[in-house]
Image (cartoon, rainbow over all chains, first blue to last red; front, side, top):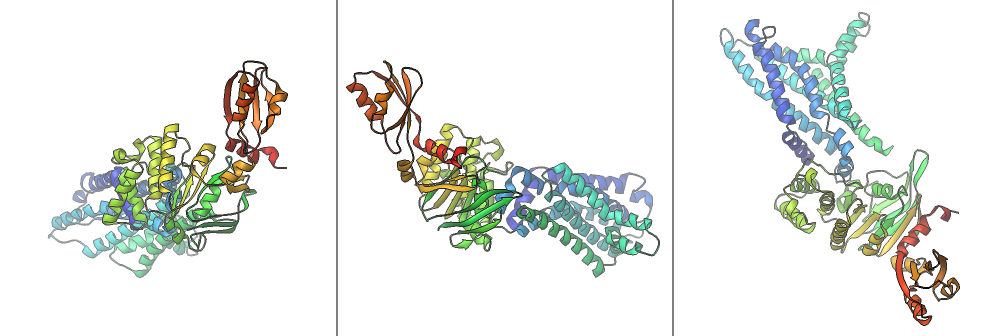
Length: 242
Length: 307
């Protein structure tokens, strides 16, 4: 597993994917947070980081599928899947290795935004007047959301040798999981299944974590969606045996 | 370490790619796996390496069942898949270190082993290049290096020389010959000379069924004949040629030229020369048109052989 992780992560570093992802994420979020008046903290007047945590997921919807789109799609296209699967590795070694590589890259991209926290912390009046538990909860939520998106991206790339198909499918699935269920629940008649459908989506759990409330049910939700996606990936890999 | 295949069958949809074949390869044996395209060679190899599961039947490598203990089997197999897939964006030594890591090699042992295998496969000058910038012959060597890296007991090579130029074929063959001492080797090919150059034993497969499994020398003795093109300065007398011992059949091409087919295991070239000198005829051309192995292959895998 560790060899696959290293190989994938080196692949990101060698192919510029890592630098582009980190650069785009930080530029985009930095502009939104500090420059554009609509969303800028400076114009907004409140010492919080809502911009990062409410717009970050939408940036992820485009960036994470771009990170993961080649993971299995390229192996399939180049035929190297056969190489990996005839080495002493289990399918889980390969899946988890690839998942972790993407996930670690997301964490690396998010890490520099801790500077934003420090800046906003100093900008508060008086300095330090910021909802720190809320920020911590939001960070945990954002990282877990990154994990869910990575697993969705890995899954989407496992069923096609075409990277574009994989990218579009992953972005669409991420969007459905992030806000699709939420929007759909508003279509359903009040009361009946609305709440259950809403809770299927990420947004409901993400919002509750942003308030600084780390509930085991929300954690369980994130872990299980990630787990289910990786399990589906394994099923797809095994389908060569049918 | 031996390789055993028992009643192996693989069905793709409606089609039987491999139809109940059984054979075994003993330790230290080099076996050529021959057959036309689509005969089931690659499928058999993919099942043996644990990439595909069999529809029925049993494969065991070194005493371990491929279905039950896939990881044990994969550890002792070195496999070069057909078309030689590679991570083209990696450097040669980086790629080999990655593969070595998968087999649990690490640190100094991995480093010295990678150096050793790079030298063995003749990649020394190319080791700091990316795989994508290598020519086909060197890519094939990298694929071979990858298969040999962990010093496997069983080596499975799927068309190791396909698509190479004649010089490269000879070089790759040399590497295979060099490393295959004390190893069990199963390699597929549809080049007959290759089989003659490398192996002791041949298994010929056609439409998923084994049509011959024998020592090379036995096959040559029992089935193979040579086809010669003979040209005289004078007109050919077919009846006289037919009377030469060892000649099975003579077909005229022009009035001066004819094709002479010999009986299996017979070399009639000497006889032909003696005949010509005894009859005071000038033999101006004597050419082997078809090697014996090729004619055996044709005979075994041709359509009309099925009935």
